[in-house]
Image (cartoon, rainbow, N blue to C red; front, top):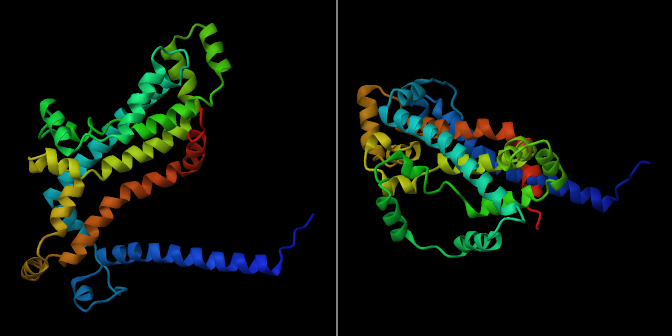
Length: 288
């Protein structure tokens, strides 16, 4: 049976599509301008061209040859990969334990998890805890303190509650231990949630900036975001003079290239797990 929309409905849809298209364009244009600027030549930047007619890879060559940026890139990759794995492991194990209704003290432990979302001890106690753990000036200070998010634990717990108990009971009858049930039954059924929270944790670790400013003193251990900040806050006039004297890429081009390099990993990862994202969030939002 065909469905015919009314005139008012078609007008609304048209206005809605135009509005959403305009919003998307406003979001995409800065990224497009940033990418084009990163490939522009010095002459194109000097004449203020919005759309460069000549392109070069000099800015990316210079960025890859800059020790500060490349070292920050390696540090951020290590922190993101290791931190995401640790965070997923801790979050899933804690959430699975909280989802078991026969676990002693379950509600009390869940109360303390929720309490951490409402009460924040503050910056100074946070720093003192990290210092007393001996993590100052250690890359692990960027991984261990933010390893578990209480909000993610609660969502993951609610997701585990959607898994039928009969599947776990059948696995236990076949001889699986609790940990075996968790690894062989629960985790394979939790791919949408795992992909969703992996994205959350990975983006958080990749954008780690404030913790590095507080806890890291060694320049060789600074993540990419700190290195990028140091590059972006250099005096433009001084940098421009250096570029002209040494025939290096224009400072604005180099900064644009550095920013593009910093967002490439997230742009690559997100499309790969996008199909799990909505499903994972909807299932994880169910209440007990």
